[in-house]
Length: 313
Image 1: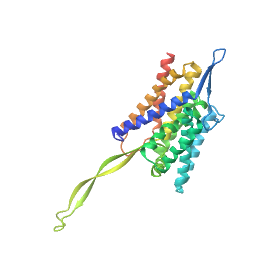
Image 2: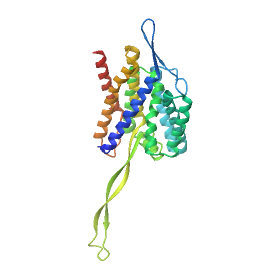
Image 3: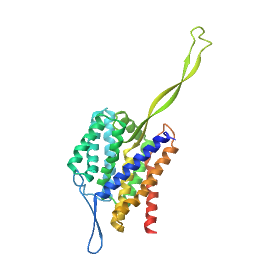
Image 4: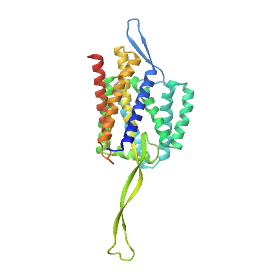
């Protein structure tokens, strides 16, 4: 087991909460109407920060992959030149905008901007576990609200596969993802779920009696309390949410399933992904890094198969 059982359960619960909040926000952000011929028209409200890019399908696929590579390269430069303040400024802006998009679905955008400004400021200036993980519940919903209308099931599956391959390469081969995670953790501006907990470590120390140095040297075991971080990257939260959101919209748009029923059905995908995350964390070894996306992608596809069977068999 990579972390203690309570920490593992808490992380999975935070993950599930972020998915449910995101799916509900996506669902609320859409309006369903029918043409006189009976065709379904699914319309998406503008986000709190404006209109979405005019892209769809393969264009969105390329756009997201390019953005990931560009963002990774930029963070590498910040790591190399130790520009922590620039990273924190970017981190603050990203939190502010994405949280505003999500909360702007529920309240007036102007109020959302004000609330999220202070949440982002507090998260960066006075970081603590509570405010950090509370904002994580809304960040990835904002990303999904932007990208879900720009994808269909085929392209979001291909996106998951591409991201999974990249994640395996970045963790197991080049290992640059590990360096980026360590940089973000040390700068106290980590993009993803993060929990800190106490662990006991033992250390052997030689104790020597003053009268007989040669004969009385002994080793005693001393227990020390240390702190360990449990983390789950932001991409591991965002991409399953985008996938599930696209499936939900597909059920509404192409199969005329009511919004609330579609929302309820895709929670099956959330559960299968959560189960795959829990399984990974239970089977993973301590102090080793694993690419989560291949496992989460498997959970997404299993959940999608179940939803498909429920509706079409």
